[in-house]
Amino acid sequence: MKKNLKGLSLNQMTEFVTQLGEKPYRAKQLMRWIYGKGVSDFKEMTDISHSFREKLAEVATVSELKQLLRQDSQDGTRKYLFELADGEQIEAVFMPGERRTTLCISSQVGCGMGCTFCATAKMGYQRNLSVGEIIDQALYILRDQAMLDKRERINVVMMGMGEPLANYDNLIPTLKLMSHDYGLQIGQKRITVSTVGLVPRIYQLADEGLKVGLAISLNSSSNEARSAVIPVNRKYPIEKLIAAAKYYTQQTGRRVTFEYVLLAGQNDTIEDAKRLVKIVHGVPCKINLIPFNPHRNSGFERPQEDGVTRFREYLLPRTYAVTVRENRGRDIAAACGQLRVEQAV
Image (tube, rainbow, N blue to C red; front, side, top):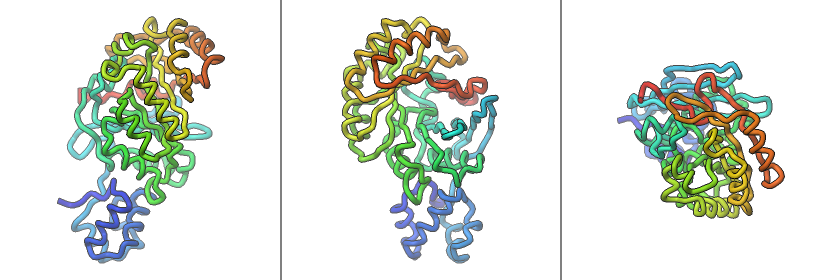
């Protein structure tokens, strides 16, 4: 079987080329072509000797995602449906902006966390994505958007399909490769990892020596309410989650973001807001309010705008920072909580 080079780190690539009898500098050449220029065909790697390219073609490959569908929103958001080598399917989202462009990337096929407000949960968990499959989502979109030379404007959020911390062994090398000078060259401070709250992994991530952002899906201000919509809360209740969040800020020097999906009549009262203020007190953080994005058979409703405003205005003078997430891609089911491969359901 040919070795897939996409997803290899510089050390791994160096080991690969030296085993073929080549000089170590060949690894950097390959990294520049694969991650810098987004090239997958060895024939196009013109500064590599013809003999080495022929050898590479015999023993290696550079995998590529297959685009099955691309949908464009009226607000400029673009959603991609990709097919993997084994036939599984995933989605990723491109969100352009004046000052920055955001790529929302998947980490798993489906998700096993069972959050009741999230469309991806209805797919169930199928499998983890490899480093190459995660990286390739970003590479594909950058190529498609002609932004390979505009990476200084790119933010990456691991908020697509799946729970990133449940794919920890592939997540860490992915984050390192994304930010490496011979990788995607996207600064760690422009990468955010989202989690529903796998507490042991949050502590572990805090000690990795990385500077990536952490976004925690809090979504409720009481354990009873949170356990009803985020089942993992029964194992890692709010108290343990907040302690882990505080540790992350201490170890990394970065504030965390608490994501709070507002569900009409469920968690959007002033009493909920009061409890939320108490919960996050003492944790350097930002609260990101996300009015629920409806999807088929969700069982939840989106709150009215005046309710969102009241909730936000109560929080503003009492917490560090509060934002309301802009609705992007709702018309193509590309907004937060809407990603779901219908063909796989």
